[in-house]
Length: 384
Length: 163
Image (tube, rainbow over all chains, first blue to last red; front, side, top):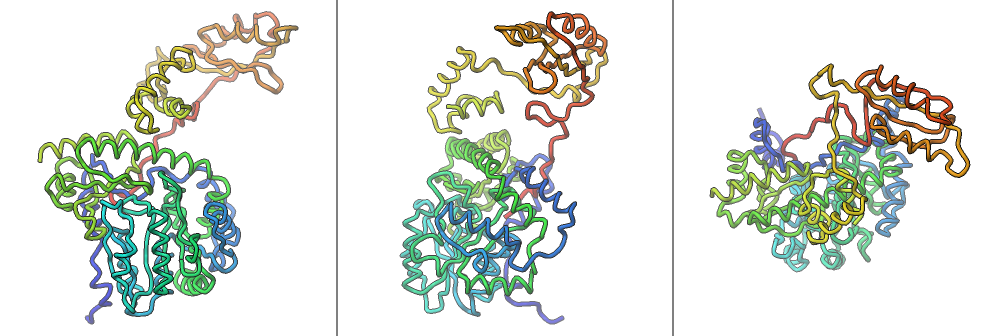
């Protein structure tokens, strides 16, 4: 047989996968490896989905998505972050941020163009750049700086081929929230070198310290920024696959063009559920966010008490403690912890080299389980 | 401070230490607040939410619950309060509300058998002065009580490790 696509063949499978296979075979495993909420979608949203199914909303929608949903998303961005997008031609509904990211990169990149990706970062960023024909250029961030992006480090990575910077804040896996000043410096850098900014803001509502800064809302950013968001995390809707892109019309229109041929539209039922989520589920979101915050405080304190240095995660639902005091590397730590104490965490280096010496722990898990996980981790560390 | 009560109302077993961490207050302050509420009666007591249907079936220990709607002739000066208080004092009576609608009081009554509850209604409740009529609704199955659903706990459908 002739060889398959070289880019995809060369792309390694996600480092998370191996742990999933081991953990799936254990029955008493406490998983801190889950990147999604432990809440089911709020009932009122599920009920709206059921209603939509019952009444036969089982068809395509327009390519860009339901106008009502786009209006609600743009109105929310305007009131929450003070940034204006026109629902008619600057917003489209995607099947989650995953598709949004893919569309944005395909639209922005010509073959061989580079995208600067501060790491540690979400596992899909670099592969998506490659699949879009681009070249990811990872730049490190340091946990000593709270994983804040240093514009000077980014500047040093800029070449004539650099086209965009791709960033997630609040971040998976670090839980880091980029300081406004760091984002402003990135925007200035983007202006200097005429770069696009792709901002993954799926965790925007899950911000516990300070307030979220929407990248598109910063002075000078709007015309060169693609904002990606969705319903998976804050509304606990991962399985519905519904997200959005807000971007200047020229970018958004091309995103719709790719989307109309590759996806057609996001699921109709999911879009109607998302309408309900934006219209009526604010109290549900607030309650879930408050719950994550409480667990975050208990869990981070617990990690520090068992001797793991843990930077304060300001957002998302991940803690990213340093495990250097254990003397083990991330993969060995995670593997032994899983085998010996049946606690699943994700080694930090699967998110980039700067994640080495850390593990990602999701606290989207019931409090008693988090407490039991801490007991087991403590036992593990004492034995080393 | 209100947050402390909301947390305890959901899970009374949370330690003061955990509550303090959750809301970012010193433990001493949390303990003092809780002691204050316990002393003033704002926190009445701590109890477990029991799904009796899930406990091993023992016919000698069956509990029957009924909602009793009571129509009462109000009296000058006290309205319904004296009758309501009098009803509430019976141990069999679990709750008493004054409600709008065609009847005046809605009570929850429990007893070991249907007969026992019926006897209570006919001999104790109905015979109180100014009680004009009662309507008894026996509970056949409890789906949700005070915010706690009694169907099977939802399973965690998530994969153990995801991106």
